[in-house]
Image (cartoon, rainbow, N blue to C red; front, side):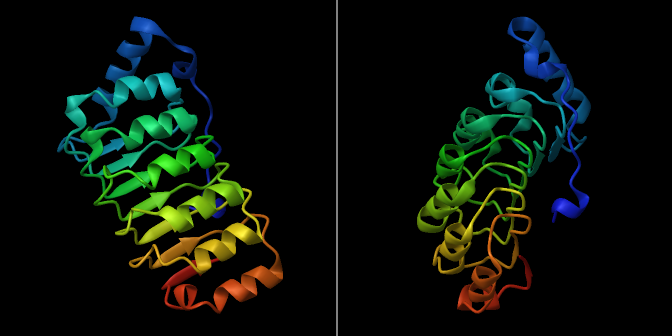
Length: 206
């Protein structure tokens, strides 16, 4: 699962600044080039489509069978996160990469409450801006109960967020958690490691 050790700084490319037909044509071309032959995987890493590009992407019926979606480094923000959460075309997703997308508490709020991602098992959100508020919302209101792997490295999370996750009852199937390179203290990490939730994890990176 990605973490800071292998995180790639995504280089912005032009689609973030496109509008109108030029943006539509660009997104269509990217999907054509990056959708796997069997239609089950779409790798849009580093394409910088932004929230405007997301509006187009979520309407593309070619993506109805996608199970692995890489949107790392696309600057979709909270607006794009909401569009994604409401996109029924992605209801078959089992693996979702959202690293480097400027997602904050508002974005994670809609993502973790959606009924769209009932099959989601892996969610990578490293290098965003969830902070304590976003993680507390997730810990209290998570509806993605099939999640097995989560990456939250580099999200400006402090002790409050870490301990909220450690004590949450909303992640019954979680097996692997990366929450390193945040703002958590040594004492909070030690407390978190001793909670029943974290003790049962197969992999824990603090």
